[in-house]
Image (cartoon, rainbow, N blue to C red):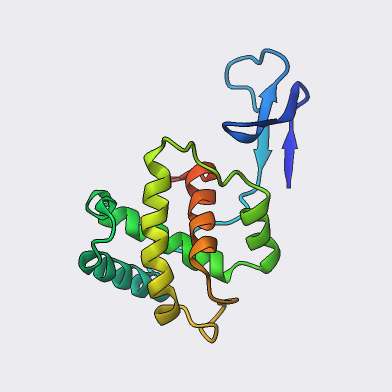
Length: 164
């Protein structure tokens, strides 16, 4: 899927996971890596995204098990809904690659872990009510642990390509 320039190597890093590391200096604007995305988020206009987003926002408004909920913007809930819909519609091989081949372990001191825990708690409750396996293109339901890993895969590895 990807093509890397000579002068780079893949190394495992305890803090960042598997990383591409330069083994030489590169001139400014050099293309070091070119790859196709593993998964593109579903569009905000997707009916499943709208339903999942609305259900998650409602559930978070009444569930106060985490102080993090007040810090999560509605836009963030929407981005996560877009990602989860794309994730459940993706082929199993893509899901497995995202869960097992990309970095999904945040720095323990990062607030990202608490946010992912809180969002996974809410989405694990609402996913079964919105994304049934009979919905078009949905491959199956997600556990809270799988949702957390999918969210962290996005947060730690995804790049927003707005306007491209």
